[in-house]
Image (tube, rainbow, N blue to C red; front, side, top):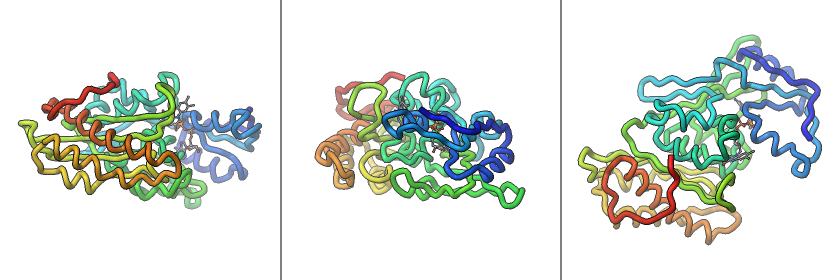
Length: 305
Ligand SMILES: Cc1cc2nc3c(=O)[nH]c(=O)nc-3n(C[C@H](O)[C@H](O)[C@H](O)COP(=O)(O)OP(=O)(O)OC[C@H]3O[C@@H](n4cnc5c(N)ncnc54)[C@H](O)[C@@H]3O)c2cc1C
């Protein structure tokens, strides 16, 4: 059971930051609360009593998104369901609908924020590899006296290890900013212990742009989750593919490279096998999403979005 002495619902960022700064030790921020509630459920963390909870879900500044200068700024309260239902987000962040359809279920997707997923810093978080592939930055606010001060850094630098981030005491994440990849094809692969409502063992994301004829890789974005302490971007493999003619041999060669990067402490052989197949599948599916012909198409189970 989760209980607390005080449950705050601020409506502005300065109010939330002041509450957070003054909150007694052991207090928690919550957005969708989909990580906190299972953590606090009896049997995992036992009975949890918090001095204060600060619910960020009513803060207007943290909701919605804006697109400018080739970047999409997602307020920290943007939830997974929006990547499925909002046509503009689907067009600008083409991997996110595929990530979202594999994420939890309808109810959780309506609550779970992408920012909360990133802050939670699970090695298996589904949302983090796409954010890395989209050159994601994280925007953070804190208080200096009564003044709101802001900073921004790459999500790749924000993540320090399992459950560890660069977030400092008193700070709140306000947004994630990602490249707009309109015109790219996207895909997301995921495997876990069961078919649905599953946390990933391994996940892979791809975003691909081809030349107008669909014969050459113009741009490639690739990232993997679940293979080590933090999700990783595969920039060397992206560079190997960019500017090259699209062939089955090239895709197969590129897909074999990240196999050596599996650094998880458990099920290494299984993960290596999965990684090779997933990078290849991610590239194939993203190519198919562009409408380009996929060399020697593969027969695989597909998610439909
Ligand atoms: C049934 C179920 C299925 C799930 N399936 C998946 C899945 O398929 N894939 C997956 O990756 N995860 C899954 N999860 C985990 C969870 O839903 C995600 O991690 C979710 O994105 C967390 O977002 P939230 O808004 O609910 O975070 P919360 O639970 O509210 O918070 C998570 C952490 O982030 C912090 N936080 C949240 N917002 C901010 C902010 N703006 N600034 C600073 N700190 C903040 C909180 O303090 C807390 O430490 C599942 C959970 C459940 C219960």
